[in-house]
Image (cartoon, rainbow, N blue to C red; front, side):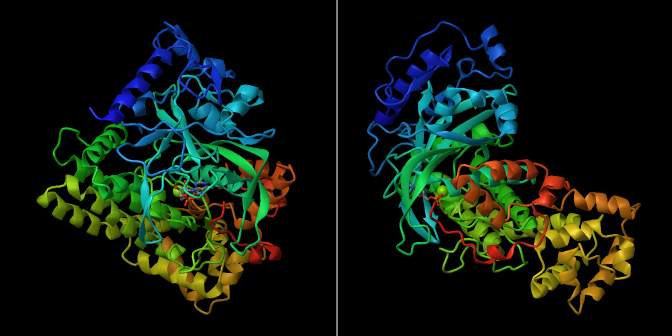
Length: 579
Ligand code: AMP
Ligand code: MG
């Protein structure tokens, strides 16, 4: 047994003791040890457990545990929270650093609290909740963990990265038996903080909170955000890397996901030759998150790889279908579960432009929207490199074939999604041409991607036939200026005519259900951030509400101008990696 396993087992033992009834919160600081944990004889399976599975507004009736992770995966033997190179483990124990100043709750996601965490939304009024979601206290019995991972950043191997400002505060098993990992982001330094301060500022936290929830409601696999708090603690940032360092406020988002493991989680183990540990992690991930892969099959790593390839292709096609550019598609930001994670300098493309780069720090335009599918391939290739030690000669060969199939998966999913965006039923061999033709018109006319598709969903076929584009359809009006617009319309109408058993109203209904009217445009997020900086969280709340129903026209959103041409002040808006 390695030293790491020894510690893991000790931790497990501590957790097991307190599993049964300790749902109280423990202050961080002097109590940030494993001492003082009450012992109870109550079993998780008794009546109390069932009670707890109903929605509660008291955290004393609620529990978290990191047992499912530390029981199976080794933990760092060095208990200190000091910045260093870590080996032979998956996690290091590290406690969040509480803010010194008063903390304000900016927003919560009712859906995450109630639907995932079995908490009644009124829990947000309690001090325990504020303490929990700001890193002021941890749930007794749950040992906070920080994950060791590496990654390829902008094409090059970057070595050890890890959770430099995030703490996995525990796993929650909800009433459906689902396990969700709760992670604070911006909660202080960890062994993986490198040169960072372990903090996140308000602007980036507002953006992550709003966007991860918005992506969920767009139907795109993503981490979720349960809450957002802001402090008065000073955090210094050079937002545009131009030497102008400014004081900002520290904020924390409580994020939840079924798993936070990334491609970089496996890469670091391959790079450091920790191959037994790599197998342990792989088996754990497969067992927990890939139920269709047979654990007893000698091809299980190959099956796992094939699923990640398929789901990554699916995810990137989904991003493209809503014009989402992640901004930093490094392998450490690519989830093994193929969910969208680590929201930073992301952006929704406005004028259609395959060269759209949301991140102004991305000088080489590596992560431009039109390159995301290629980058997906690059990242999967890095995953394959990391898996090589666990594959035999034949399996390696097959894995390369699987990787080669990525482009085909991507294009067929992309076509399927864009077919739906155009309201096409069935398949026709000219569909790709019709889609590409439209995108070319959009590119030439700089038409707004989101609204052009939305307005095609709202316009009638009669109006299109007569090329009568009403004034309010501003994006379509831009598109209609193209000399080949009428030609495209002719082909489109012919194709719609081949939809079996369709009517124009059902086509429009179908299309409005897949073409959002509202996405989190940069200017919308920026407007909410500017107000939030002055403790006016009204626009954060408005956007949260609106983006929960992105496909439905909403009076408040219309009033706020969310479906109009972006305001002129937004033209110069920039987002950088600084967060
Ligand atoms: P990102 O590209 O934001 O996902 O972060 C890349 C790496 O930098 C991760 O290992 C982060 O944990 C780390 N990192 C980013 N910002 C900070 C910070 N302020 N303090 C410590 N680590 C950070
Ligand atoms: Mg990251």
